[in-house]
Length: 307
Image 1 (tube, rainbow, N blue to C red):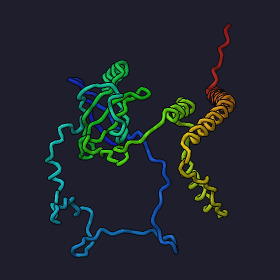
Image 2: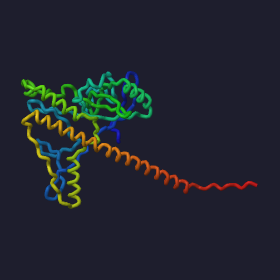
Image 3: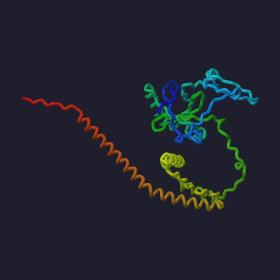
Image 4: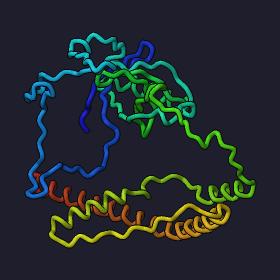
């Protein structure tokens, strides 16, 4: 990974120099817009809407349009005058329980790595924060924008989650919230039963992006000149007419799925264990071969004969 920002965590009078890394990446298939006839790339020019002339990137500024249609032009000098008090600093504002923060506020995740001179205070704050069971609320400025963020510990590393400001979260104003909808006790009980049946520890490794995998297969088939086969789509089910019957059927299906999963689990665990042992054996073999090569290359010492 390549660091995208350098700064410091400011914790009271303690300063911890750190590097910032993007913690996530989108695993998406990238496309270009091309000419259908010959595959040529489609290019775009930056053209002024008033004089029709192409504009160089260095001559482009940011403009804010007023309700009257007039444009206020802002330059780089205007942005440099803005008060970013937390520039190049991650200021710790307070500590609080993680459950008090609504996940809807989370925006983007970053890893924080300590500089060589900041390793000890980094580990000190990390261990203290982890032992407290809390997270730190911080303020940081990234890309000329000041944000609130959460500092938490994940696998021994600080993760900084930037957050939206409260006024950036839309209100859920929907008509059904004001309606008087009657839910029967039997339906609620069956829904709870379905939830209990489908409850399990979350393992993200068991999920995968089926759409991206199918898209990559289509691209590979195109490259290989093979016939592209249209994958079959599962039939879309309409809304349930009998809610109670649908819930009961869902519970039964979930139980069957859980039973099948429990039956496959020993096989999967055995496969994982076998792969792990095979990896250890391969590593041991490689280490043995490397040692043999070193011994072969090392000069042999002559032994002296004693009188």
